[in-house]
Amino acid sequence: MKILVTGASGFIGGRFARFALEQGFDVRVSGRRAEGVEHLVRRGAEFIPGDLTDGLLVRDLCVDIDAVVHCAGHRGTWGRYQDFQRDNVLVTENVVEACLKQRVRRLVHLSSAALYFDGRSHVGLTEEQVPRRFRHPYAATKNLAEQKVFGAQEFGLEVIALRPRCVTGAGDMSVFPRLLKMQRKGRLAIVGNGLNKVDFTSVQNLSDALLSSLLASGSALGKAYNISNGAPIPLWDVINYVMRQMNIAQVTRHRSYGLAYSMGALSELACKLWPGQPEPSQSRLGAQFMSRDFTLDISRARHYLDYDPKVTLWAALDEFCGWWKAQQSPYR
Image (cartoon, rainbow, N blue to C red):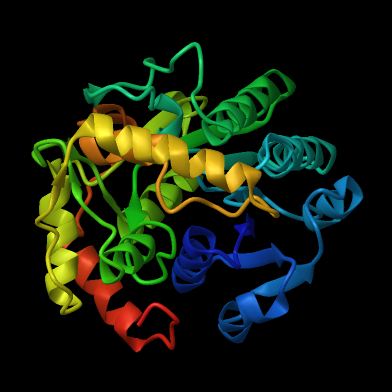
């Protein structure tokens, strides 16, 4: 099988592309930066540079491709709506159209469990519990992108969407690096009582789920799947485990949710008024994330994809910490 992996210069896409090569797949990767995929090219991947907002380029990327694993997108909790719209919705439209034009058989779309988040605590969220309104452009545009993907079924494209939660492991630049930086500066505090349980996902477990999605058939197709390690753990236990591994003082200070939310609102306002609108170190969304239960029901993935998360969170955290220590990073 010949597959195209978009977003291969990023954390999840790059990890899956390498895994697919190890499994014997013929892999083509896309990206704006050749240096970001050099390790994949050395392993045998074909690299075609370009910008996925260019529909003609995406069409060329899909020539002679059997399946696309679409991992590219705009992530984060800060930024202009139009940037999220462009990179999550327009790019996905281009990928869907290219798949149909070039008769690609299957599209596996990397979505996000962030689209469930409404600022309240939730335990055991199922795939049907998507809110009517979204609190952030990332969630709103990931939902729109999913709609574009599932709309292509009527034209014969086989589709699957995965919604992972807090993916970590070697290469993670979004979850723990930010927290490590904040704690080094003494800005991190436990929000609320510190007992809120959340789900994480080992990047290797997610790669296994992506592989299963490429090979699935029959009733497994045409569905969205929650993906996590399936073992919710108190968030602050996880954060302090990483702090210990990195020889950084553990987080012991507490801050009420109301104070954290207010500080986030003020920080956001200040950054919006500041030239260039830099990302705030604290936000209202961050206060909610740090204090709420947020876990997924992964029974659908277990049933239809035979998903079995084998890599524990602690192993994924050890992998991240070992990798992070080896980096020449400004956060060290």
